[in-house]
Image (cartoon, rainbow, N blue to C red):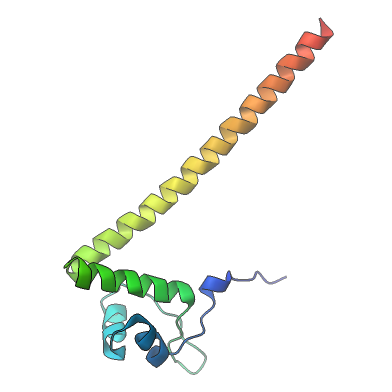
Length: 117
C-alpha cells in the first residue's frame, strides 16, 4: 500500500514556472536552495519540481526579504521558528483532545459509579 501525498506537497512546477509564480528569477530559487532555505525534490531527469507548498514557502521568503527587509540568515531563523510554532500548536491540540477524552471517560465512569449505588 502506498501513502498518498497531500495535494499541496505534490511536485508539479518546473523552476521557470515556479520563478514566475513567485516573482523572482530562477537563479534566485537556485540560490535559496544552495544556501539551504528550501529543499526541492528532483525528477528522475534531475529537474527541480516545485509543489504548491514550496511556492507558498518561497512567497513567504520573498515577503520576509523584500517587504520586511530581513536578510537570508534572519529568514532561516524565522522559518525555523514558524515550523516550531506549528509543531507546538499541533502538540497543544493533541493535549487538548486528550484532556477532553480523559474528562469524558472520567465523567462517564462517575456516572456509571453513581448509577450502581
